[in-house]
Length: 246
Image (cartoon, rainbow, N blue to C red; front, side):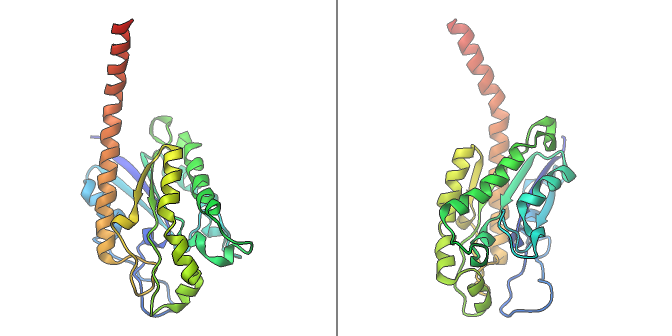
């Protein structure tokens, strides 16, 4: 069986940052391969049948700039990333929570901002058939970011993401992203059905959440595979029915 390849493109929750109670001047620690959701997904799907590319970067946004940190822009990096790892069968997109930080929106943030960023990334993937197997764009699974939590520990993080307003915005992701997925005819999974942020910093996932999310995404990929396998048969049946009726 031909091995298939999935690009997991996201932010620190795709990288697997371990939430900490206290701020540190050192780089964040990372969950191990038995915990991070992309690794769990691969093991659930079958490690001998799937190649997984973990492309997570802390602070990554869809298209909104942090002064001096243009390298965190998904819209600038996504196409080179797709080209670097082609041919790809799937792209799992799980990015957006960093978009809600107030410092990126001096004129305010609204639900159009929330949708426009992720739509731009979807269009980049759809517009690059050369990055997929068989000169067809990779299939896309859009995963909704998990809700932000208020934390008694990392008040610096709570402030950075807009405090109560940030929590309210994070709770709008499922409806907004689901609407985008339907309009773009791509698969959708709400990360909040399986994962939650740690109370330590209110943003990064608990270890159990990574495991549940990895298994859930694997299940969604399997269902997409099954739908793909059934599609040619459905098409042949429709064609045969049409020939009979004629």
